[in-house]
Image (cartoon, rainbow, N blue to C red; front, side):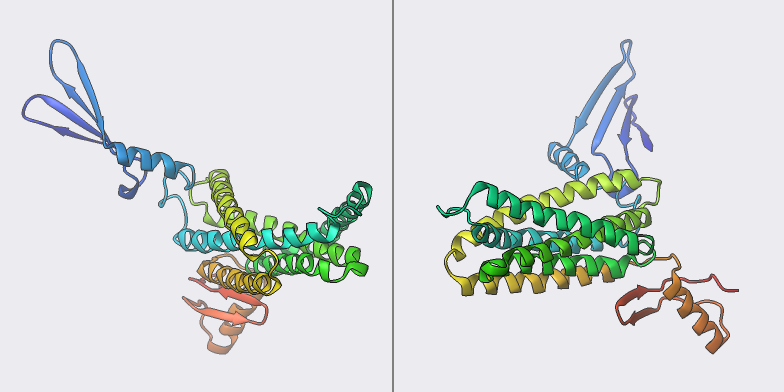
Length: 308
């Protein structure tokens, strides 16, 4: 919107806004009444630069264009991504060592074939997982989000273990690739469902694009930290394992906190069962503000008024 202020000296000051007051654009234009029209623009340079930077990472109209749980979720999601890519450098280093990078006895065709089996197993696993669980992912987005990151941790653990089992190297890395294939499918599907949840102004595409920018920034920072960590822990198995396990614990904690931030207002089988049970036991047709933990599920029940 635009706000006009008329001064006593015959000039009009225009302030340009975008969305809510918290997203005001710090630009003004002064129009002076004279024989020749004069327009002067002024702006706070720091705020202008800051707004430009934010435009690469937050949706247009933020925070009014997203749900209130968006900020908390994205904060913890960024932290879990940072820890993921940091420890990924440790598992990648171990995997390359097991394949034989740097060893004179290693052959190019042998390493290529091992990598082929690893990727082939992961692709096949992704197809099978989609076949069996594809239609169930969006209705249980919270649960599958946690499962996806747990499987990703298991996959990295397999890579880190691979140098310890040279005779069973192919089996170990294929199991790791299979585990990560579940992560790719489940994470992508649940992300799409959550993006639709966050979008308040039909801006799902914008939210998805900005989430990609946030993920890229977390990836670059995590890989940089991972390289430093790999350099400092090189040749020290105890330090490598301690770092990996510590980052894994933090990774799952950050994922749990991210999921707990979500307040979904859509019904699935579990939430419907909770509502029906509550209605049968109490005779009341709504359930407001409850937070219920079930085995394997984390469900936020918010302002349910579906049963009359």
